[in-house]
Length: 294
View (cartoon, rainbow, N blue to C red):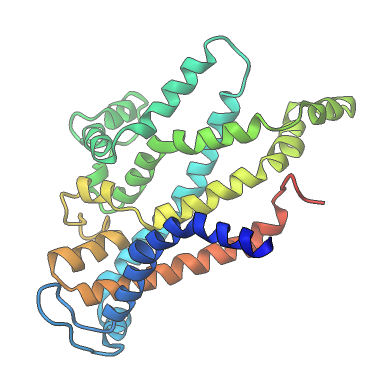
């Protein structure tokens, strides 16, 4: 009986296993091999050992620039996105009329294709006639060149990333609605106000969805590409300040035809993301509440 159930189990997951090895594991192993070659994508691949990795760390300033740009975007953008998405979900969890309409309005921007939203933000950040500078001028604050400024292009891209906060908001909203009302009632009996109920009941009970969005947000921010490519017209400007890691990897692979070099960059990115993810599990993993915890 057990053998029969085991056989059925493997039969059911067989399509997924085939797809995983053909479309995920296979290309990954092949790219690992290519990272030790000078493959250009057109001719034969010649084995060069660890030369690609040595060149990346010792002779490539754009590697360090793109890595710094990505870390800056991740360190500031991920926490900001978590807070904005969570606060939106808290506001949209209130029981008022037409709440479904409000939720739809805040969720719709996350459905807009990244290219379209990037073109929209280019207009918003136009130094001469953009809405961003118009608002700053109205408030008597200094204006900026935004996407044309070396100092402001990364903050501008972080602001752009908040456009898609509705995606995380939906997950937060599901977590908020799963918090038992009895916990709030017990907290009220103990004299807790709204702020204490939020901090001591809502946040701990939704820590699992916060942690999930943290992990996914970090992985996604390390792979940011489209918006930087569109706003910089594909050159990573000004002065490479919007050249993010995957953007640089793409240029090496498909613009300069250095597939072997780009494969090495991809494996370094994989290791960086893996390390950051493991650190998060180590630091926050035990503080997360799961319903099946004893």
